[in-house]
Image 1 (cartoon, rainbow, N blue to C red):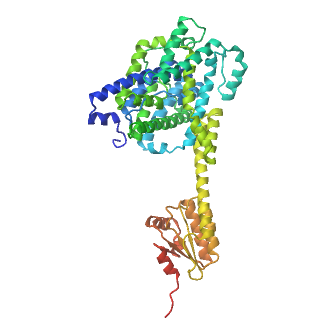
Image 2: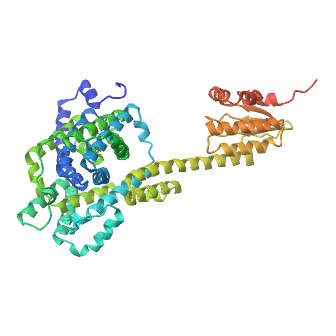
Image 3: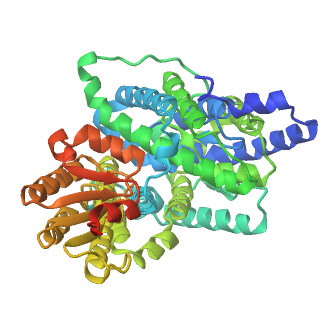
Length: 546
């Protein structure tokens, strides 16, 4: 456990942190806390839960992720990526189901860390990540149209196409004041970002717009319109759990765990590049798991590492987990003493902030770049994107991973095919013109696995038909899987039955051991094995009588 779970905070405190760095971390944490305030509220509202649940998540999960995490600068809390997941779970299973799913996801994340799967999650293909991230961004944007335009829609369909059908049918009910508030929010957020990086544009926008709306009594819906008073207290809640229903929550829990793990590790990798550091991926997963196990008991929603807030932390001087802890404390104080005023925030203002979040999440530049690349990457990208938008994120990730694996196997098979054909057609290995009569040589140039095994076997049999001695060079064979072993065994048996003498050359010790374990003794006993091609050639060359 100790070798896997090593929180950065404890390591840094043992090594010693200067008072100057602590001051920088505290100031960075306060700034990040202010940045996180409107985002935590907006993400919660967009997810279909009350605003206080977003704040609770940012406080509790933000503290735990920094306290136990494997990154020096990671900031945790609710993120845009979880909006459609949380919304879907609440819609199907209610708040109780969300709590259970999040706790189960936390347990899975802890298990991922203990099993040292942190490095494996980094190998999720980039086109798949861009595909579902861009899809999430489009879905988030589509969910904000109602509030951005102030449309009077009593019930909104959950599916993407259904939403837009309703939007177009209800355009006549547009509230121009709400639209104006949304536009002004976007303008202030972007304009502030160009003037200064110290003060978050979303925070400035939310303060100014809320004040103007209240002063002039503008006719727009506010958080209070939908959620009433915002609680500024923590309540410990235990979900109602029926063992017979736990299986229903496994799929959403796995989705939360996978997405949370991927996003947190991506954020940590980005942060490493910004500070020239190195995070501990398995420790980070365990910390994310702990946060997602504990937070739901206080009414929170799923949490993970937030790339934008982590970057803000770094740019403001944060270099230790003290900044993340300070960010959580800052949000706690705001929630306790100023939280009651959050109910006055216009929904169209939150919509404007989320539209900017969706744009930043869209990764459209990466999307376009991938479309100019390999056809395999394009297939994964477009499939994952369309499934995320039109079907479900869970399905998108599942099919995306499977499709990536299948296309990878197809690509490896094509490469093997080219190698095989090159060796057969051009004799690229060496000049074999001086080989004794009846002796042929063929080289297996790479791993003999299921994607290439059948083709290799066909070529071996084809060459073996026209010779009495066949030398199979295996110096570049790093491994042979079960399919390859069965195909090789079948080829050896057929050729031996025809009287062809088989010599394997360049077989390393590990491969020879596997051959002895997995090929029938009767067949292997008739197969000669040499450690080098020179020795195999000597064995194949008849000695001249003096």
